[in-house]
Length: 179
Image (spheres, rainbow, N blue to C red):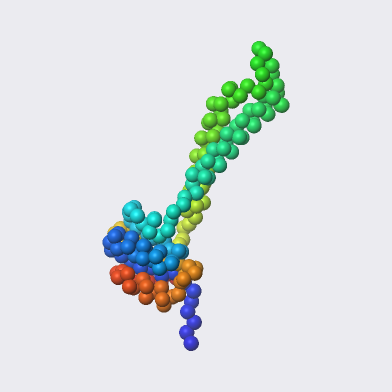
């Protein structure tokens, strides 16, 4: 009895972006949820076809901006009211209009940093190696071929059944992606 080694998934190669979008729609309708598509250019409708609906970047940037605003305001409040209070000309110690420019600047700074770090984190970067690089024809993904990979950790994944399903989509080739 031959023992099958675990794999990352199965990958189908297409030469046309429309075929890839149609294949992704059919795979999503079939119930596959752990899949990804690789293309040399943006393909309209592909993100929706593979079930990518939500993006958490806006929330991360909002949280970063609010943290920056809070940090700036608390820093200036502490220095002006608690640490070194100066009553000049009878103005109140908590003179918040003077705090607005620096609060705005730190809001933008923290939001920008959270956007960059959030983008890296959500994309799983830096990633010098990915299992799809094991497929010999994957080098064409940056030129003119389109790939759909159904991952082995998908609940519906069965090596033979998923392979037959991908073959029914009429790809150029279906490959196993080793770890």
